[in-house]
Length: 205
Image (tube, rainbow, N blue to C red; front, side, top):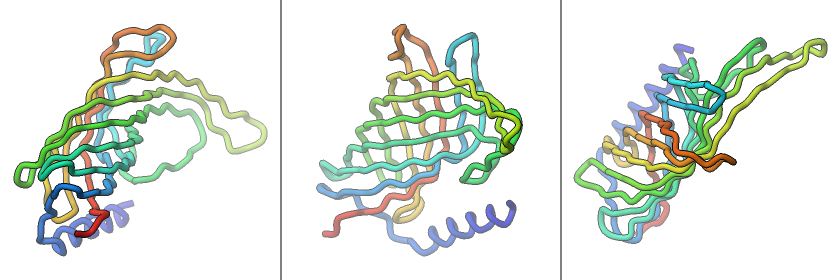
């Protein structure tokens, strides 16, 4: 595992060194957003007196940005965020008992760029999930799974710092308030993420 982490660090460092010019955000620009929500904190209240308050690692995120004015843009984004105990950007299936927590969400934000910083705010639609069970890889013992999930609407706020032409680091705060389950209610849950972000310009001018 330490060699994989070293490779990731070398890749990010080489990417930063190779790109000394900063990306400009001009009117009419389309950009692809690829991100790793690497370090996360989830506060979940899925029900049945279960509450999750946990730090963990890794996730995946993809989105598209459109600059409707110079240094102003809208972003549509989808993210899948976990709070895994491993640092690796992929999941290993292990046998035995397990508990997992994760969140999937769409967000739509309005964003502004000031020098190297971008700031955004908007709305999100989230599906928050807690599950536990037993995973078996033999034919004798059956796998089991118990899951609680809820759908909710909330707000999204983000802030990024542009390090190189495409590479950014940032913070995301994504609270949800309004439950959309059978029993509609107001319940506070949140996600904090430290994110590694690459922005790739799609159209050339």
